[in-house]
Image (cartoon, rainbow, N blue to C red; front, side, top):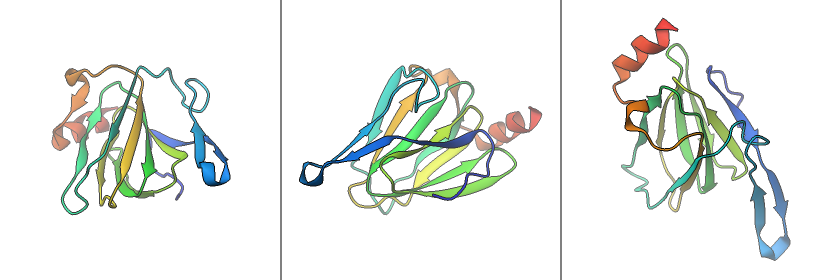
Length: 141
């Protein structure tokens, strides 16, 4: 994966144990590989590779780490000043999505599965879904 140049992001690498024909095991621990306590885990699958676009928002307080555990996708990041696109395809490498980081996921391969570890439970009030509002807030800080 390319070095991350946007602010409010970074990477985590999970221990990956390959056991021949018995597959690979990736291990994720809160407050170790994941830099926060995990309160919610969710996954996204059954994506249409030609038209699905996910994300399109930022969070006010929530921290997340996103993984591509099968297939590949493009993760677009925007900190309000700098934009970057990352090809996600390593099942044990995740990208940190800190607060005030606009993110969009697109260009999914067939069979792509995303896994996200989040620092808090779902709260709609934490979402910033309007890009212009996000830019205003991101540039105030």
